[in-house]
Length: 587
Image (cartoon, rainbow, N blue to C red; front, side, top):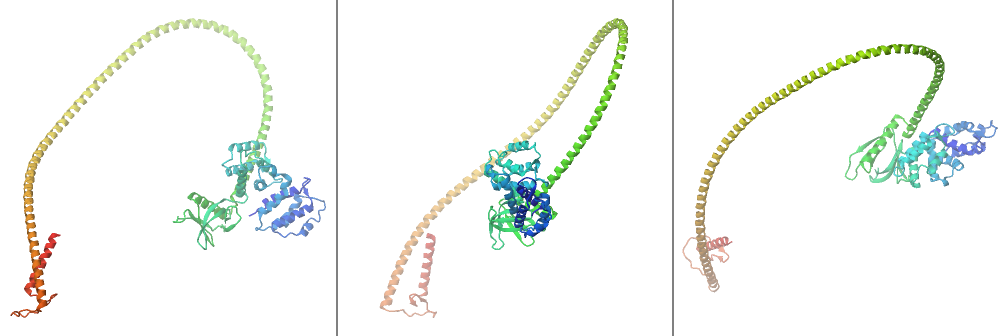
């Protein structure tokens, strides 16, 4: 966004640079070239015929700034659109004027730094021609530079600057560049630090950069997070690949219906906030909570300014400073007028004082004559009074003697009264001490009686406790004897049970040995029987005597059908059961 007064200031510098003779006028050919350059930079179609047509009636030679201004407003500034590069326009005007007025090779700053100071001068200078900056605005610029270089700038240098500027009211742009470039207020400051400070102030005041820094932005298509360099201005917020501002990646236009809100933290991202625009929303992650709050407050202030229709914060602050200076100037003018009125009133009062002084001198002469006459009369009176005083002095001495005698008597009487009063106070103190001693004695008696009663009560309680302890001790001893007898009985029973258990264990071992022997015999007999039956079955076949009996179904075993009788099967079951029980007892 551009302002006409800012453009006119840059053009004024270019016009002044073309004034070689310093007469305040420039030739038409040079103005024609200047107009063509302005139209080219501002993207306006240049019409050379319009220039000739406008100045066809002016054949007086070179033109002044006032003569060129109507053509500039009508054919150039009134046709300017918003899409031209104001910075490029300022660089063109700077190119025309700086070589004639200053040489940066002798300074501590570069040509780019001098150009930025030139732009800052145009922004802070008064809207009066020839352009000049007041010392208050220059101090404001130096203070901004101090804040930008807080790590190396000394407050003493700033104090020295204010001291040197106190004698001057206005400075030109070249004096301002010379002041900063010669290092008068940056002693011990590195050239790069000074250049960085100037660049930061230039971005803040001229480029309207309210805040800038690295943050993470969420993409709209792939939803990935990418680090970008964000630059906040009053009406927009741009983001670049890095801080050199070369590769711009996007642009957020701030409007009155935009809003910014804080978002809760997520597992992957912290310090989140969102900028909601009518067509799109932007999720951004700051590096920490402090940066997040700073960015939210800065964006909210920009949106609030847009809603109120106010200019950028620095332009509004500049207007406020100008208004304060104007009010202060009005107060100073009013004060000067009052001083003039007071001076006139003082001169009038001085004249009146001179007249009064003359009258007082005449009155003083008359008073001197009257004083001499009065002095003579007074001397006569003094002689008369001296005699009277001597008589009165004698009378007074007699009276003083009488008074002294009466005073001594009165002093003796008062001394006796004071002694009696002292005796009376001593008697009262003695009575008071005696009464207090009686009260203390009575209190001690009551205290002793109460202590004796408490001691008797404690002794009765202790005797009761002693009797209870004796009874409890007797009962405990009886219980202890009963428990001891019971323990002895149980020990005897336990010994008898142990003996019985040992005897039963011995019997069990004997029975077990007998059982093993019987089992071995039974196994040998079974083996013999099995061997005999196998031989019989082999040599004679299945020969069995047919005997009368019940006709129950024959049992089928692993030796074949009807190979064993029921009695033999029962015996084998019994033997198998005994073997199983023996194995269980052994395990």
